[in-house]
Image (tube, rainbow, N blue to C red; front, side, top):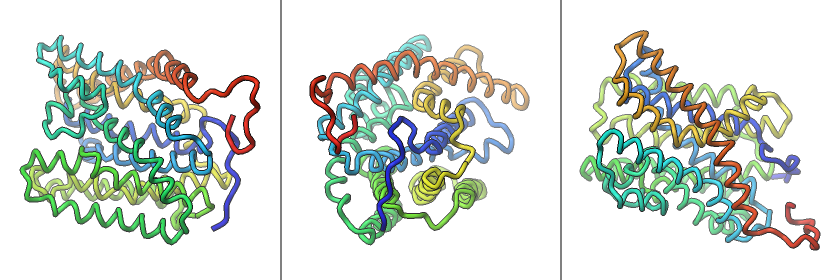
Length: 375
């Protein structure tokens, strides 16, 4: 496997991946709109299991971190501080907003849930009131925090290996997810849902898959499928879930609810690799334009804030009548939450991240950057 030079430094060195972030966030938004507001015929069926977008983000996180930090020589403490600066300020703001909306709705809020959320440990608790109590959408950040803690070790173990080891690792974590699904079928529905869908240890399989994909890309590996084919496979997978959903209730262990998240990781890995490879080869994908990158930047804030807006809107106006009113409600909530996300990105997320990153890892002004370290 031949090493390739990294793209020019910048926030969007693989712009198509930034664009894909928006579409994954949109999938999650439409999933929540379908289940919390009302269905839009045709579209709701296709996104009924759109929570799989979180799986995409877990795989993407591993791939981007491996691509970025492999060979960068960044100390673990600096890496962890950078990740804290990236996710925690907006998490805190979203928890405040979520708790405020719960208060307006007259619903009690668990202080344990709020504290666990702010400490990024809430997904480790099997009680739904804890892992969804502070901000329901923020449960995934508890998983991400665990990924960040384990990433320096993963990188040290995997970075120097041969391509064959990465291939076996990717196959191993994919098979492990497939085996874990029936292995936990004897648990109660609540415990099974937590163990398969929320628990960081289970979700780590998706992150590891992303890490080996990112390392392989960094060494010049070319995925065996093109971007259109990979995208078609992802769409086909979600369409297959429609008849499956009609035949099997979500309460059963072999329903498409958990399958949509556990079994989609290899497809998302293929999509991420194909998009990244297209960028590295200088091919246009339609995902790396200025507006797609901008929307991709807003996607993290949109993910954290959209459910709060949906909840507040349904409480204030009630659920709309089926048909055209539901579609208008969808459009209004989507636009409002995306606008709020843009504001949060520019006023909270980016400024706070820049300020916090500057507190740790900054070199003295008199010391020139090493040739082996990014300035």
